Amino acid sequence: MSFDTLPPVLGEALAARGYEAPTPVQAAVIDPEAAGRDLIVSAQTGSGKTVAFGLALAEQLLGELGGSPLSKSPLALVIAPTRELALQVSRELGWLYAGAGLRIATCVGGMDASKERRNLRGGPAIVVGTPGRLRDHLERGALDLSGLIGVVLDEADEMLDMGFREDLEEILDATHEGRRTLLFSATMPRPIERLAERYQRDALRLSLVGETRGHGDIAYQAVTVAPSEIENAVVNLLRFHEAETAICFCATRESVRRLHTTLQNRGFGVVALSGEHSQSERNQALQALRDRRARVCVATDVAARGIDLPTLSLVIHVEIPRDAETLQHRSGRTGRAGKKGTAAIVVPYNRRRRVEGMLRGARIEAEWVDAPTPKAIAKRDWARLLETITTPREYEEGDRTLAADIMARMSAEDIAAALVHAHRAELPTPEELLANTPEAREKAKAERHRPGFEDVVWFKMDIGRRHNAEPRWLLPLICRRGHITRNEIGAIRIGQHESWFQVPRAVAAKFADTVQRTASPEDEQDAIAILEAPDGPRVEARQNRKHGGGGKVHARPLGKPSGDKPSRGRPPFKKGKPGGGKPFAGKPKFSGKGKAKGKPGGPRKG
Image 1 (tube, rainbow, N blue to C red):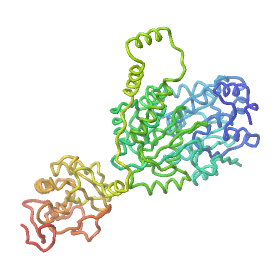
Image 2 (image 1 turned 90 degrees about the horizontal axis):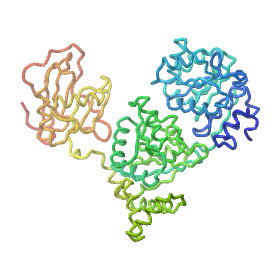
Image 3 (image 1 turned 30 degrees about the vertical axis):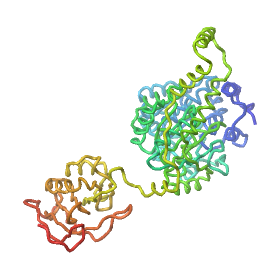
Image 4 (image 1 turned 135 degrees about the vertical axis):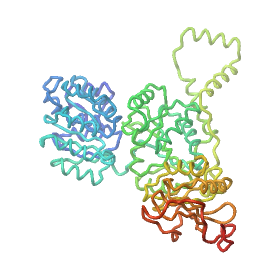
């Protein structure tokens, strides 16, 4: 199939962008069978979906305009999950319809809402936006949906995952029943099908996913490393591939900040994208990638949704995706529009089984490899340098004059060596990694502690998930009570009614003494208990809550949590109801028995 059946203005725009033939999804939506119908399109990201729905609405859209660039009210509405994707869609439709001269208004969070309202009053034929901002304009009366001929839901599965169901339903409920609804989604879970049943009529289903959910143009690699070597492995992967543009996915904003700083210090041209960045900062970061001022982007999943960079050929999953769908969406940033790409998943030794299950669920065949070594990177650099230097090019007369002067001063071998040295000086130095041996893998699986926390003492607090306990507010509380820094606190495990945390044995005795001395009835926490005293008996230092009862500090044997889950023995104390008992006053009293080294039956303390 070709673009011959399209209006000439669109055919010319496609030819100018280098399109010779439609992609499968584009061919499916302009097929005569799909003309004028509601569509449910299952297609991977990067398959040309944006141009596809632009073509699907073209005949009706241009027919309604009748040659005029302005429209009394919007004729087409495109809804996308993120600002980046909405802006990308707006750009794509902009060049596609540039010859027709029609206006496109973009409405996304983080932009000037008053300016958007002015643009909506300016007669745009197409409105592109995110659900929340579109709903806001609709409720304020700035967005008129009465004249729509079509609504497009792009990445519908992601919009539902992000909690936009109510926004979508309010927007769709405000449109008239005669409009077309085009639903594009990489996956089709049951919530998407329910949405289609409610808002579509006799929809034609087009599935362009195929048997394998992974892109055929993406080569998947699972890179096994020691847990402590993840950042070094990322450095070597970037150096080995030397991609024109690469993106590194992290799970949290903090991880993005840390990796961005690491790569910046190593000499990479890198930008960051996460929820903590403003829209202006995001736009500047993306422009730096397009201008080649930066070659690496470190981003969270949501922030990178909708990024479309033609030169992006490498995706690195620095932190393992939460599920197969996230793996698919992340990897789909590369291998787009027929171009080849690589998706590398950095897999700590102790997480291999989980990744294997994820790949099976996604029906993706990945090659399991070790991280590139400095020797392998040097070999790649050698080949790349030879190709760069020997590529034919035009030289100015001044270049040849300078070259002749240099040759008169140096031998050809010295000149070539200087050229190689100058080339290498611009490249970040690769990292030496631990060898991927059975011994190293077993050691990595056994080492689950931070450096300095090999020998620890467990403490318990009498608050848990039922009290909305979170590490972010437990940390300062523990620091204040025990006069230690957050770097001296190890693992924190939160249970239903209690929480556990580690303190290095070297400072545990001082910490335990300080906890008892700083006990106060006005403190907002329940109790801090020593599960294993560094010297002498194991004791529990219990303090009543601000409104709780008891008011005594007890010493008694307690169990230690094993494995990843805390011990669930009989609680040593019954919980009192708020308001019971008297405030703690006077010296702490001790009861119960204890013995040195933590064994029961020793002499009584107190």
